[in-house]
Image 1 (cartoon, rainbow, N blue to C red):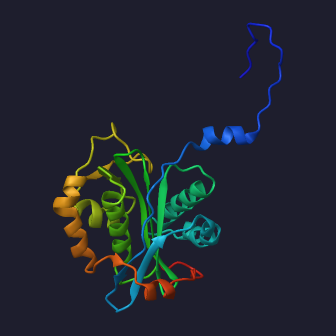
Image 2: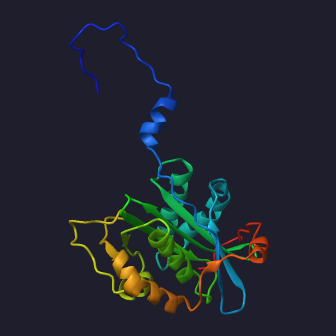
Image 3: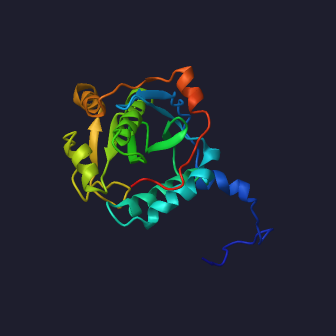
Amino acid sequence: MWKEIPEKVSQEQITFDVRELEPILSGPSLKLPPYEPEMAKLKDGSYLYIRPLEKDEVPKLLPFVKKLLDVDHDFYDIVGVRVYGELLGWYRNRLKDPYFMIGTINGKLAGFANARVMNNGIHISLHSMAFVRGLRVGAIMYYAKAKYAFEKLGAKEWWATYESYNGFKRWGLGMAQPSYPWPDVQHELGGAKVYYVTKEYWDLSIKDYLKQLVKTELEPASAEVAEANKELIIPDSPVV
């Protein structure tokens, strides 16, 4: 935009160091208490080790997630491109207050979950994925991030939406989530309906439902399990 100035000025050209602009574009970040690694015993006797994804691990994970863009069933392509964007948005400081968690089995990537803080009351559930089958890894990852939101970060509401039919059946219908009026309230993933859980509903019902669903317990990770998962191993291709 160009407009003539209404007053004489001593400098008609003003330049900025981009470091002066970055705080405006990225905004300040909340100081979120860290997610403490947990583990869950799986039905085959192995352990899923859940920990925060480190920011410097994002470039290593991006090529793996990118392969989902070519999977044209069960909405993997759209979930893949959105997860790719969320990872890159975090890496480039263009995503507000996210938290990313990965689940590994003996170091091998098995699950992924992420969400973000909209404000001190509302947390946005983004995605949960499993890269192994038959071990309820996706459900455990969802449980872990919701538990972290409500019990560690103090969330008052959890906002979710669903791209796939399976996700809606398991979480939306399974948790009997109410929804806000649409289109008055829209989820940031495509402007879809917002299905929500309050802290009271979490304490009264949802927490127990998720425990029943995952058929295991989340507990602090032991030193032995942490050591077995010290090195992150990313598979050649996701199992979908």
